[in-house]
Image 1 (tube, protein in one colour):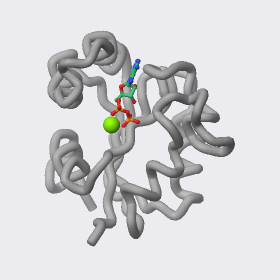
Image 2 (cartoon, rainbow, N blue to C red):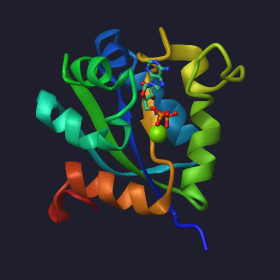
Image 3 (cartoon, helix red, strand yellow):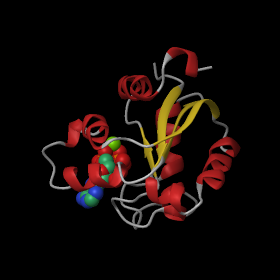
Image 4 (cartoon, helix red, strand yellow):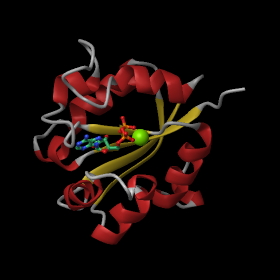
Length: 139
Ligand code: ADP
Ligand code: MG
């Protein structure tokens, strides 16, 4: 059975460009309930830890530099079938391939700076949520 929670990050460029409010509004209008939310800046080591599944990829180091380059907004979102529903809402990793109306289509500036992160499994949603939030920060 699929779970009802996913984890997201609004990435540095999208925060810097002032899209946080718009993106959170789209998320809410799509029926997700925000159950945890914070503005933080990841240290480089934190970005390395968060993206460690990609450590052997050619884009890993630049991605970690980018993700630690400025404030990000982290959130836990609740909706039935959250992982799949949120991946649909954000669109393809490559914004050129993302469908019209998706968050990445609207707000991404490149493959690396693709506006938002979305968990890819229930297991990773829990790991990622626990990486950013303590128990009392999750309502
Ligand atoms: P997603 O975020 O859609 O789950 P991945 O988990 O494959 O995608 O990749 C994690 C992040 O790494 C992407 O969101 C993007 O920021 C970056 N990334 C992935 N592939 C590339 C690439 N070929 N070039 C540059 N950055 C990439
Ligand atoms: Mg991924």
